[in-house]
Amino acid sequence: MIRSAIRWIIHLIFRLLSRVNVSGLENVPRQGGILMAINHLSRVDPPLIYYLVGRNDASALVADSYRGNPFFSLVVYLVGGIWINRQEADIHALRLAHAHLQGGGLLGVAPEGTRSHTGALISAKTGVAYLADKAGVPVLPAAISGTETAFAQLFRLRRPQINVQFGVPFRLPPIDRQERDACLQRNTDEIMCRIAAMLPSQYWGAYAGHPRLGELLADPETPIPGCIEERAG
Image 1 (cartoon, rainbow, N blue to C red):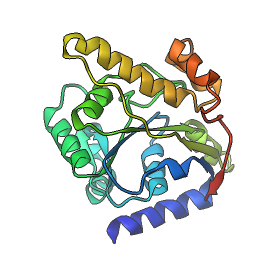
Image 2 (cartoon, rainbow, N blue to C red; image 1 turned 135 degrees about the vertical axis):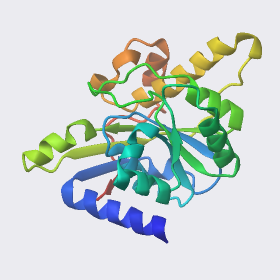
Image 3 (cartoon, one colour; image 1 turned 90 degrees about the vertical axis):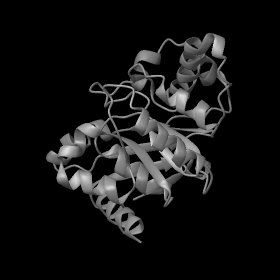
Image 4 (cartoon, rainbow, N blue to C red; image 1 turned 90 degrees about the horizontal axis):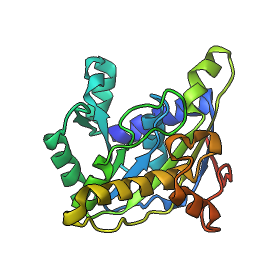
C-alpha cells in the first residue's frame, strides 16, 4: 500500500513537471529475480525508474552518503532500498542484494557507481557483473537521457524532456575462476555497451570506441535510441 502510494506521488510529480517518453516497458518482467542496470545522470533517476517498473518488490542499491538527508532516508526505508558504502567492498550490502535477487525481487543498480557530471557514460565498476554472476539472474539494461538538465530547465520554467528505454533482459556468460578479473571486466563492458547502444552518441562517453558497442549498433535487433513506443506522464 505504501509503495503504491509512493509510486502514485512520483507519477504525479513527473506528469506535472516533465514530459517522459518510455520505450521497451514490455521488457520489464512482472516477476522473478532480475538485476536492472541503468546509467546515472541525476538524483531524479531512481524515483523515475521506481515508478516506471511498477513492481512492489523493486529495490535498489543506494549510496549511504544520502543517509544524512532525513526525507531521502525515509523514502529509501519505505521502498526497501539497500544502503551501500561505495568507498569499500560492502559485503553486507552485497549479501542483502544477493538475498533480494534470490528471493525473486528486482534490484536496480548503477554500474558506474556515481552520477556522471558530464552526461556521458563513465567507466563502470565490476560489482554489478559480480552480483549478476553470484545471484545467477538475468540483467535488464535501461538507458536514461534528459535528466541531467532537468533541474536547469525547470528553473527556466520549461518542462524537461526525459527519455527512458528498457532493453531486452539477457544472461551474462559464467565467470571463469582462473581468469576472474578479465571475465568480470568483459561482463561489465557487455552491460555498459548494451546501455550505450540505447543512448544517443553524445552519451557514449568511455564506451564510444568499444568494439562491442559497434557490434550492437550493427545488429538490427538492437533498439534504436529515441524510438518511442509509449508515453508515460
